[in-house]
Length: 523
Image (cartoon, rainbow, N blue to C red):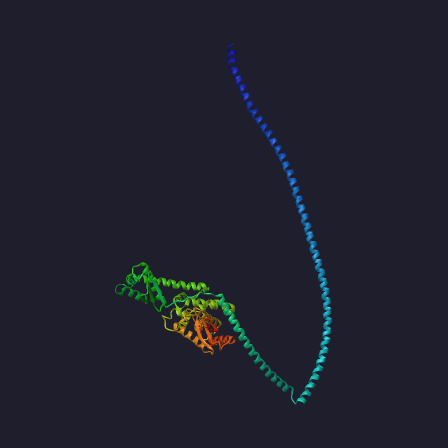
């Protein structure tokens, strides 16, 4: 019993334990097996779905391929059709060309046949002409022999005599023709020259600039005159010594006159005086500073004036030192005319005329600008402005035409090119136009007196008066000697005599006045 009880006490738990182990082992085996089955099921489903999608993709690909193949087939058929059309068009063109070539071939064959026929005909005619020429030569020879017998002269002698007479006749005709052509050429040349000058004057218009040999400085009050003079004249002496000018301080109210033959010195003195007057500090030390400052300003003004002149004319590649000489012309005058303005006028006029004649207008402008370059330093260097200008032009390597224009514009040296002639003409135009240059009082009075003297020298003239600064002469005639018709002739005669005997700028108007008065006295 004890053993049975012990066995029951220990066997039952053992059996339960073994059974639990078996169940655990069974569970450990069957659980993974169910998971594998589930995985296999999922895998089979995924495979089926993939196969279905693959079939769909294959079907879609087949459809796309069929569509692409169809489209390519349509395009290929279209391209083949177009190629066939092009081939057909080319074939038609080739057929047309072939037909044209055939027609041309037939035409050429026809022409060739005609040419051969004509060639044969020409050959026959040439043979006939050769025969006739031989017959004519025989007849001419016989006629010449008969003429030689009649004229008692050989054919060579007759030919020489005939040529001699023909030469004499032609020589006379040629001389007459040349004379007529020369006269006609002179008339045409004069007309063309007038038209050319008129055109140049019309294209160029410039205000007249007249300067004087003295400068005037305005003063705010006469009290400054004493300060400018300074104690015992120290200030005025300092200004005159530093600038090289003469200061004229007289009774003229609120004015100081600066006089000097050198326009640059005069300009320096004028600027210095204006600075001193504005500053108010007038003493020798300050005067020296201001004069030095004025010299620098004038030098800058000279350089700027030269550069502006070149810019206006479009002239380049000129020596830097020569630009300064051009600028110095700004302060130089000739008969009251500013030389730089005059040179610009000459350059423009010469350039316009050169352009009309087809000559190098840039070279003509250059020559016109530099024709009076010697006047920039003619008060510092000995010699005429022409000699100085030629030396400067040669020194700075100017063109030979420019040098000739400088030395020939007053007729000292013959002009050897057309540009020199144009510069001389432009120089005359610029100087002679009304108001361009001022005359001295003595010459002006002489011209007025000569004008009146010429007018009074005609028979029937009672009196003559020059008015409007010599631009008009009014002639009073005796009514009993000069009638209305003769008055017109008298005006024309006076005009011709003035033109022949007087030199004057511009024009002079001649007015003949004939007056008849009837007087009665009532008593």
